[in-house]
Length: 167
Image (cartoon, rainbow, N blue to C red; front, side, top):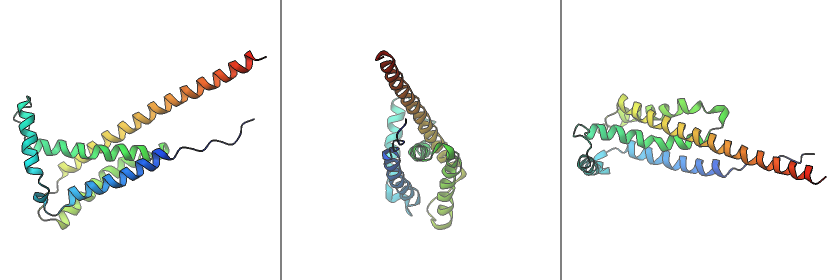
């Protein structure tokens, strides 16, 4: 006879939710700061480009390419955390939520921030990064689920072997 079903662990959901809320706020601050020059990314971008060019990245990889790549990278954690939070039955929500957040940012920049340059290119980069993160979370969850299934199957097999051997 089976006893009551063991409770699900909520640690992953709780931790991922807290991190998602914090990181979403961080992205909002970075992307909706009224005066982007105050964030001083320009000098950091020049230093990063200098290092990249010294290690062999072609000169054609310029500030625009770095910004596009950074936009992708900035949204990977959002997609990853969202992928950890959403239940499997509603994973498809990430397909709408990730570009939706990016469109919200760009529309807010266009409507309220005259020193910001909203663009469809940013939406594409952000969405790409978000989808990469969501895919990584889905793959990680599948790997953990497969591992857990093997552990449970092995424990059940050993218990059954013990029971049969005990007769």
